[in-house]
Amino acid sequence: MLPDRWTPYVSDDGIRIGLVPRGEEFIVQRSLCFGRYGRISAFVHCKQLPDDHEFFSSVQHVELTPDTVGEFCENMLKSVSYFRSFEVCTGVTAFEKEWRRSPSSEVDLNRFKETRYEKCCRSADCVMLVKSVKIRRCHNCCKLWRILWRHDQKAASDKTPEKGMNFSKMNTPQKRKAYLREQRKSHRLHVENRRLKKKIEELVDKNGVDIDSDLSKTLSELLNKKEVLEKLTPIQAIFIQQQLKAAEAKSPYAVRWHPAIVRLALTIRMTSPKAYEELQGLLRLPSERQLHDYSHVFQAKGAPP
Image (tube, rainbow, N blue to C red; front, side, top):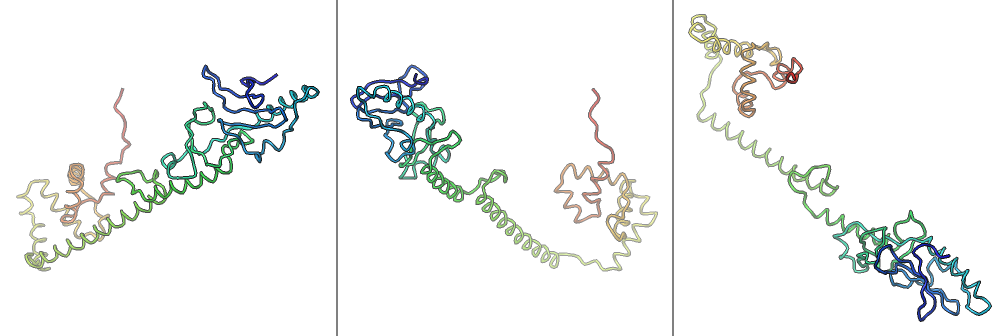
């Protein structure tokens, strides 16, 4: 008995036994043709397998005569059984954009309803059948896979990564390009920063007012006087006192900031981080780390249900 979906029919060149897919449409995926004089031909997707294919090394050729009918039929069943141990080559299913770039390949749109692939690109020398289910493609299609992979890698390396693209989704050439782009950007910013610093120094030298140490000491003594502090609001007095203490401190981390100054700094920092950075260049204020420590003393809890 023939296996399921293997159908015999008679043709001009002999007896054919073909594999058809499930469904109403009659399509012969692969077939064996047994000639009267014992010659066996194999076809896959209507293409004849070459005589040096692995399949023909293990089949016998039995001539059909009145005395060898039984042997001829038994040989057909054995040949079909051995033919079933082969699977169709899946070709190259990846790198679809590169399929048309290889002149020694052809695109298979799966008009024969194979279940191992939807569509693929085959080598022009594809042997069509592989011995094991675990083997996806023949050696010629493996060579084609390497060629298409190199084309794909070259195309990817030529493509500049988009701005904002996740670094983990880039391939190695794209990461290199992104790194060089950020390096150039950093260099431009560094040059611009030096230019602006030089310009500020020139403006200060030209329009600035020099404050010598005696004047600075006089201002400090004036601000420390009780009469001056009494004319200020409480928050102004606290602010000036904190500025004087911070100026005398050996380290910015040695200053014990007043809660009112901490609240003021947090308010400015939450309103505009950039403005807080600019103020830090003019005034003595708590550092970013100190604000983080002050604002994370207690663990935040969700609202009650």
